[in-house]
Image (cartoon, rainbow, N blue to C red):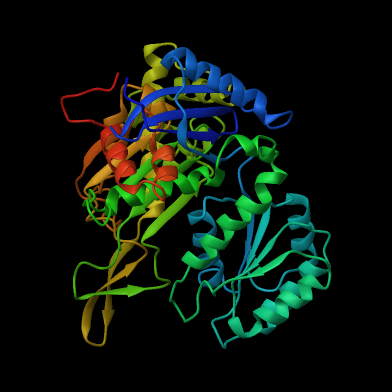
Length: 472
């Protein structure tokens, strides 16, 4: 019998520890398993249950060439970002944190106040990203904020990604108070110029070296090669690999991933997002090529009422869903009171399908840029703010409501441009797919070790949603 060259990919999630065993020669999933995420006691307990589940489904487990893990356990990587100006360095810091797979729990600008410091201490972040000023520019606020953090009770790692002329002094101030401070390149070295990749890499390195231990995941460290990154970062890496391909194999091209959860909706886009017309003028901070946003008010259960409110209110949502407003209010109350309920009737399924589409519409509109015509001394000109997604040709959905529901295509079509929102730079048309096997985190983990295998696995794992298909 031929020996299977296999990899075990682990996701230590907030609720479940999920496993995917992958045949590296065939780029296919051998089997899946899951168990509870027992981070608060001993993470090995949940891992053992997940392995037992995997073995029940596949028989004897092979010797794994790679055993790699990602994690969003214990609330994920909770980060606070601090910048100088909200729409400049603070926004650049936000892009860096989200791109590294963080859960953004606080975003501050200008000089920190006593109240700000108290709030940050109460938030108990896993990491802080401190930015401020272009290289050679403003030093004062960057150094003052470092001094205030040095005097605080915070004991988490602090990444310094601001004015390079002041970073050494900022680090000295923090280290003199016993803080763990690390310098990386400025997230905005020049005015409106984004440089977030170095900060993202440092955040991931600190996550591996420090946060994993704080989350209790190091108790199982001898059983896998390493925890490479937060799970959202693994998914973003997989999305980028699918779009760009490898040196030897082309990718799909510009794409978008939508992940709808119980409390949030994540949007990933892979494209340059620049104005397609030479006559269009880009205004504002440069956008990341690989961009992730997290909408904390757009979820299927914990924040269902916020979805309806953001969509335009109960009356508008009810009309779109062809439901009575009183029935919408009743089901929203159920979402609030029973956050783990699953649709158990045709009415409930229709409600979930409408809610997922509303979440998609709002999340993508926020993620996308806009264009408008302004009058100048030379006549009318087209101005773009934010990222142009109109050239995206592939949209991938993941998350329980999309994978297990029957209206996934209709929900994902909510990402497309609409005459109702004429200024939005949403995708114009696209092919739709599902990450039906929840394989993207595994693809992201494999990307650095076996990129060709990871790309093939990712492409094979996507389930097409053609117009005449339902995923029910």
